[in-house]
Image (cartoon, rainbow, N blue to C red; front, side):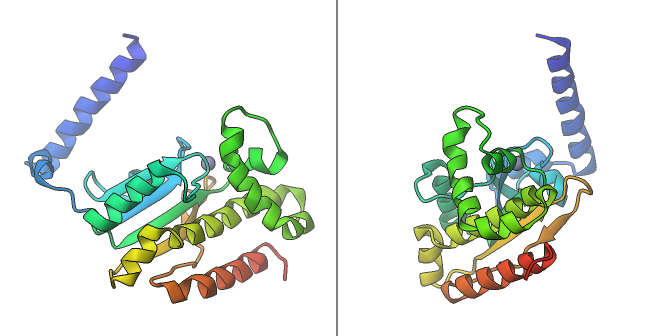
Length: 220
Ligand SMILES: [Zn+2]
């Protein structure tokens, strides 16, 4: 085993000891149940570690990550996480979290071939094409971050349209969908205000968030 990997195990032992020292019995309590209130659907990018960014401990945040935080109704991996989180864990909030300067979004925007992920990023290109006129009006250097945010809005709406979220709302379950974006340059999360707590919220929230995005990027 390389020295670098030994470092990881040493770090892990130090972390576990630290957690246990601050809160004796922490791990044995988690054995019995997890009761997270939140499901985070974010990008796989190593610079966006979900728990750390929002200061939550093990047991407090259910997480699904993929390249460019895509939510599509044919992805059984994402849907399985979503269904377990909503139906079994009964999380109260599901947030789609994009981030600025996202490599997946950059590749999609510029038609850069990166490999197998090209097929996955086709979904982000669909977002690009839907908002092509707006993106074309922006200065080139603003387009990536604009598409990062547009992608969050579209994926949040996709999330609202899954049978899992629709069924939860139909039976009166209290679960809200949010769209956030994380700034790599300053470590801060911004709420894109596309929050929906029921089916009637979805389109008005989407339209308002899109209009706000256009204003933020100096358009419309
Ligand atoms: Zn990313």
